[in-house]
Image (cartoon, rainbow, N blue to C red; front, side, top):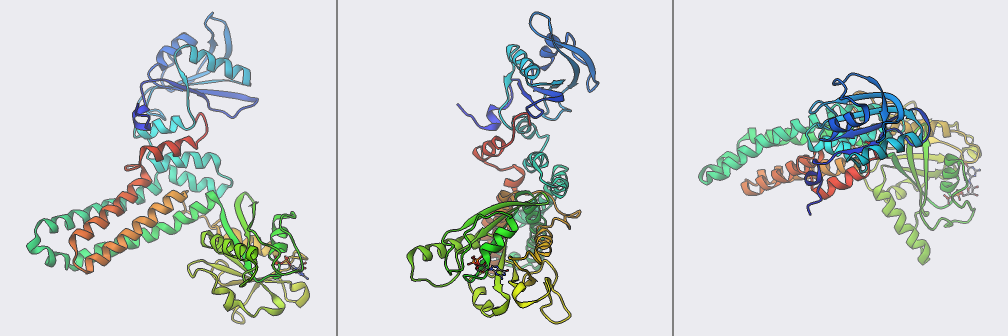
Length: 462
Ligand code: GDP
């Protein structure tokens, strides 16, 4: 049997408790599908007027009242799922809600799987995939900034920008495909400056989109920060001070941290994953070498590095920089200022000139021991996540969106290179790959298996 979201959608009627479990003033059961009118008649004795609240008793098989509440009917296609939808707003107690669910199931509805309402909305063209994901992100958002970003995605801002790029990409593909069809003119055509400009401008638009998408992803998933530095610089102490617990082992002997210690914390609702790494140095010890290997792997995955040095002996920064991938932004932390007497907070790199707080290479003076400067560090991390600056341009995005954007950018890059070689067939192929990557984001082209996985991660009743 074809169990894909597209194939399994429709036909039956689904029901779920849409409000969180537990007791509350109101509990809502949501029903979607072709049986809605029939179910309304059975439970309410009437089909409510479209989109008008109707106060009514909800009745069981024997006509006894289960609850007295409000019913709202949203006829298709102007409903969330695109199907007939009925909402029963009852009293929010688990028993009442369960009785209502049991009644609906007795009448032919089936309990909805997680995310099935959103899945139907997607299949029926009410939302594209990025918007459906934004519904989940809005519900799960851990901060006001993340909620605003999710709302912008839900309203289609992200999809719209992807759509515009995809449209321009299609136009370019049409031209390139046409050129291939006329081999005798192909070379001349591929030399057209307008074609090269078109390709470059696409690359630029994609790049512009990548930054707000990355910010959106950070807002949603949190930033992964690696604490790196020489043994004894104070990495474990700093992790503990930030996490306000004693997770990592602090020891005056170099090389104690032999594994990657992970700490998950919230900075005012912003998720932050902190990784403490083995001291970066060449080691003869097998266990420590393994720790260093893991540290390097963690660093590769990070969004930012906090490079920690002892303020008293900050030499070796260049050496440490050699361990960091060049694309990764880093912040230099001058630790142990309780011993050197340096003022806490941002440090001027050039006298009289403090770097942009979020730029790579910004320096902050702290003491993991006394806690001096940690408030500045927290503010800095929040700013790097776009927490304060999450303005009008950030929208919620997921890793999978970033991956797809990166693949599209890569393909466009190759397309540009092939274009310079006047290699029509290969240009066409790269452009096709770029379009496919973009289409994955909005769900135009997304495998059923991936769709299934995405919607399964939603909660029930959504
Ligand atoms: P790691 O090897 O980089 O993880 O360093 P640790 O966190 O284990 O710290 C090494 C030593 O430096 C320990 O004895 C800490 O107590 C000490 N230490 C760490 N941070 C500070 C600080 O801010 N001030 C002072 N005075 N000592 C510190």
